[in-house]
Image 1 (cartoon, rainbow, N blue to C red):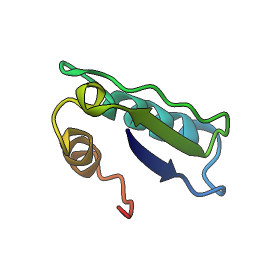
Image 2 (tube, helix red, strand yellow):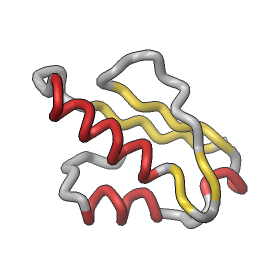
Image 3 (cartoon, rainbow, N blue to C red):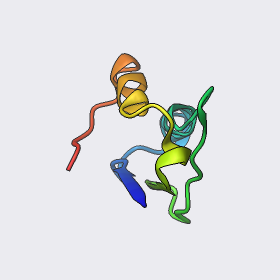
Length: 74
């Protein structure tokens, strides 16, 4: 089981938050498949799935980097 957690600053609200949410959701939905966000919090994304669910390793990382979303990978 893989898990990816992405936190967005609480100060991001309104249109900024919606744009970030869309970018993050799109990063985990691609031609290899879709990994569901299991979080109920608007500023936290928790994507969980098996190896087959994640598709291309690092694909989401490249997508978020391309769209200039700054984050820390732990």
